[in-house]
Amino acid sequence: MSSTPLSPLHLAVALDGTGWHPASWREPVARPRELFTAAYWAGLVAEAERGLLDFVTFEDGLGLQSSHYAEPDGRTDQVRGRLDAVLTAARIAPLTRHIGLVPTVVTTHTEPFHISKAIATLDYVSSGRAGLRVQISARPHEADHFGRRTFPPFRLEDLASPAGQERLAGHFDEAADHIEVVRRLWDSWEDDAEIRDVATGRFVDRDKLHYIDFEGRHFSVKGPSITPRPPQGQPLVSALAHQTIPYRLVARATDLGYVTPHDAGQAREIVAEIRAEQRAAGRADETVHIFGDLVVFLDDDPAEAVARRERLDALAGEPYTGDARIFTGTPAQLADLLQELQSEGLTGFRLRPAVAGHDLPAITRGLVPELQRRSAFRRAYEADTLRGLLGLARPANRYAASA
Image (spheres, rainbow, N blue to C red):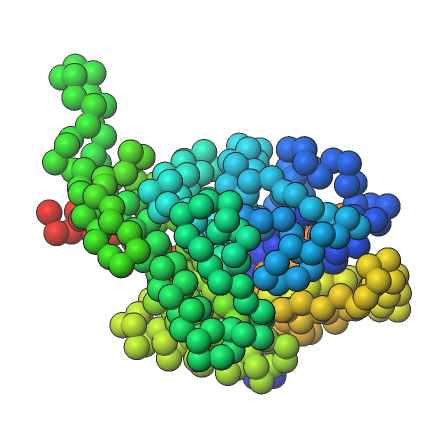
């Protein structure tokens, strides 16, 4: 680890059902009967806000959860079904004051015009705390829900082949266009386009509403939006990335990327690749956060964390594995790991609680105080917007500058 003092960490949590372990719903603390209630999600986010976390993400998808990457699995012993992430975030927004709310949006089958106004609306109802996590879908059975496109079947290992990489690149090129359209629509109203002058009867200045006239391979969108420019100007755009093609999307189009290094060496390599792509895209001077993702089993006694993981694996019938490193241990041990990974260039972390009812409070009441003792995490919220929490300036409106 570098001897140079590190900047304070940014911390987020990824919320998914009763937790990231597929057997988490069977834990006594899990409350599966409340999973599809607003109160359940409001309680989780309130706990995250008590821990002064930067933001929470909400998982989503266009097909039932599956233990198989590319197809349904037919299992009945794991959580299946979920609420809409954007609507859940909008329901919770008025119940919170500081924490950022970042729902997942599948760009492959969702129109950017709809997403732009949904996230702009979330930014209004949260007073500037909205973001989105863009996600692609290459799964044939999810395309079948919409009937507009067909995708050939594939296996996860097929994505490493030249044909698989070409297919993947097409999906991420579409995601890049989606983000560009959304960003232009957010800017299609200038900040002072609304006059609201009762005396003169003028509510809006039409000269400050702009056609975006986007013409690309995947979308043709005229604009302007029907929703005024969001309070943040541009809500946070983020994406999860595991290899070069999505790293490129993070570097060229987002404000924040989630990556999954399994050790310090991998973290260093991933950061270097994304920063190189950022320079190639002409964004070297812009802040693009790189957060490391980890699944966490946290207990005061490391043996208890190991035993809990083993018990859940036995209930699931197989050891739990995933894309991200799985940490099992104490809050102090996790703090050591986070600071080691931070020294390789990561600017924050998105933690995935293995059991939401257990590991989220362990993060907020165990890990956060430990990081605060090390002067590595905030002791109070220091900004009113999500961009502010992450040290991101409110961007100028591209159309106002050229008007």
